[in-house]
Amino acid sequence: MQARRRTADRGPFRAEHLRSGDPYELSNGHPVYCAPTGGRASGPNHLGSSVVGWDPAVKEAGVDTGYSVAPGTLRAPDVAVGNVPDRPGWVKGVPELAIEYADVGQDEEKLQEKIVDLLAAGTRLLWVVRLNGPRRVEVHEPRKALRVVLPGQVLSAPGILKNPVRVEALYDRSEAEKATLTNLLQRHGYEDLDAVLAAGREEGREEGREEGREEGILEGKRDALRRVLDRRGLRLSKAAAAKISSCKSERELDGWLDRALVASTAAEVFKRAGR
Image 1 (cartoon, rainbow, N blue to C red):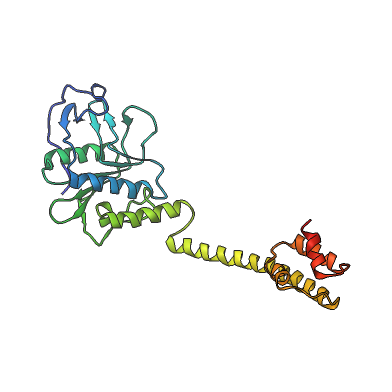
Image 2: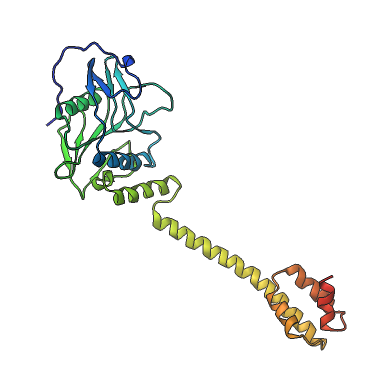
């Protein structure tokens, strides 16, 4: 069943009569009181805004953003995607996607009026997340019948969100964290966590190959130094042998090698290197 609005005369109020923080919305000039959100709904509000707000296709998202869809109408969806400009004052128009959370004590008549106001003004999709009773999401679209999506199923918003959203991600912290992490990774060029791990492994292999090349050069110079000393009959002490084995400097090895060609003793090679 599609949402319907109660027929009423135009009320006396306009959006300009309300200030940010006032606990009211407006529908056709009539004030609509908005009670504070209970604990069970406030957490999911935060989770839902994170999941959809970080989707790679989303540039703007907000919570409780006030939309002045007409002079006498002001609506503030729990979560809004699209058309959330970074400037003060009520926003003209409506979001592309709106999300409402409904829990115990929800005034259904007021909720239906809000849905009608937003869809009539141009909102493309409106999801109502039901927290009371069996968990579910009701999907409202202009000129289409209401659809119900259950836990275990996914919601899609073509042209608004890149990724489908599991129903549970709109109210369950664990599922919301998974969805948000995937979105954040995609915003940085990775498809998912597996892609990050694969990139890390490849980077590690490349670093290992580079380190292997450098170590190969050093070991070659160490061997050359040992051969020169051995051919010249210059015996190494244990300390000098350990010094060669632990040396990580090509420049130092080259200096030792040059001096090994003319030194009278092995100790002379290293004494001169330390001056």
